[in-house]
Image (tube, rainbow, N blue to C red; front, side):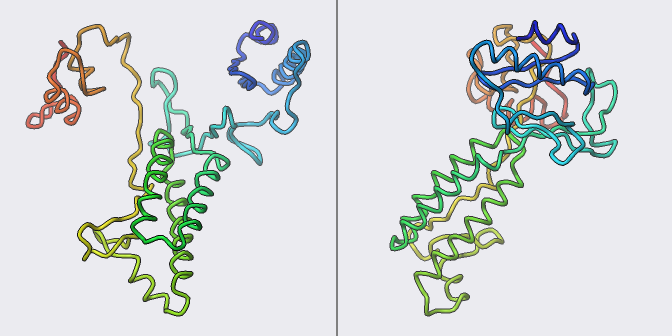
Length: 269
């Protein structure tokens, strides 16, 4: 497939995985022949292009900017000069940042599962419901923490709160909304959370997806390898390292590879 595309233009970039294929090129006139070649190639193996998923669009312009590849919405956003990404080797600013956010279709099923658990636990004690919801909330948040997901997490927390409010009002239909809120929501660190009363032997509170910190992976510098013996770099990046004591490796990772007093980076070994 890549050989067929390079006959059209050597600048066309092709990314394929299983049944999904993506062709990138700065010239729109090149993409139409590429689509014809892909159609002919797939017809030779007994496959056809999906009508609803096959489209040609600009990443920044049009009604549906960006693209969806392997269930990951990729879209560049125009930003100011001091916030834009840089080109190869950081020589020039691009004027936009490319962000990968969770797809709406991927978050509908976890949200529906939370709703099913809440409906099934209409007669459960509050602590039992919280213990049932927390693993699912934390698991879903950890699955998407490597993407740009804070706005999505805030929306999910809001929808979960609305469902829990209906759960609480249904249990006490003849009481006021203020009484219900004071019964099931309590203040923790200057915010109201769905939790059991603090007078219990152990207070149980509902986990929040927004509390899950985003995880950003830094690119490995140069031609480094875990077998090169540079324990300072790999302790700073991973934490544990075979030849370094766990306590020392943990401290190096927490400090970002620099001294806490002089703020200077440790030299490579």
